[in-house]
Amino acid sequence: MAIKHYLQFSDLTLAEYEYLIERASIIKKKFKNFETYHPLLDRTLVMVFEKNSTRTRLSFEAGMHQLGGTAVYLNTRDSQLGRGEPIEDAAQVMSRMSDIIMIRTFGQEIIERFAANSRVPVINGLTDEHHPCQVFADVFTYIEHRGSIKGKTVTWIGDANNMLYSWLQAAEVFGFHVNVSTPKGYDIDYNWVSKDHSHFTLFDDPSDACEGADLVTTDVWTSMGWEEENEIRKKAFAGWNVDAAKMARAKPDALFMHCLPAHRGEEVEAEVIDGPQSVVWDEAENRLHVQKALLEYFVKGRVA
View 1 (tube, rainbow, N blue to C red):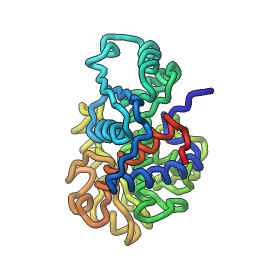
View 2 (view 1 turned 120 degrees about the horizontal axis):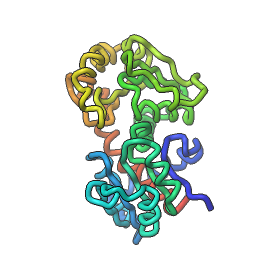
View 3 (view 1 turned 90 degrees about the vertical axis):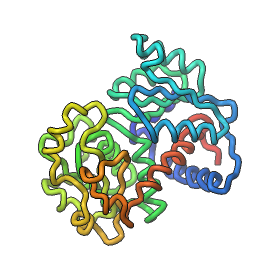
């Protein structure tokens, strides 16, 4: 049978996400109730990191342990990948010694080459083009707080980055709309979106993009790998911060999300991220729970 991977948000169907949301809720409840649940006993997750991480490493490593399995951390600097071993060879070896692999790297083509040579499922922990696990956690968080996200409006303010591309795929899967406002020069790369553009609308003014939104979300102005552009980006992104005035144009019960880490005073004001509409801490925690559901599903298949 063909190996199933999770390399971008669109790799799973709505039916699969609905199942995973149910499983994540059950697994989270067990966790909160201190119920031991070890469906992945004696199974091994290999985590390959080429980019630094806090939430991705902690959520996957803790999650695998909580499911009864073992998580092995590999940094490319400390492995043969850092000495030039071909990605294809590394995939063959790692997948013969483990049950599932998570990779956090730069270009999407890297993880696609790895997956093409892996004998076990591969999960995208982040690439420059996609961040499916984070957006799945965000969708799950919205559903926890407000119910179905179908037909809702999500506002994205900031760079057209991996988070935005995953949000656009999520909009197609779940049937919601995305208002997108990016500074000039940091617009959507249409190579990374589907030909159907009906699920998003572009706004020149980020305040206008917030009008009537159910959820407002953003990210840092300078993503990993672009640090040399930091000062240039600060000037280009002036005005593309989420402040109280922008949130006031969203619906009264609108939520605010940020995948973290956040820079208060840059992409978001402290009164927003630390305010009553912010659910960033629930959002961060839910990486653990949705990823446990993903690990269970990709190793064991449906269990209920």
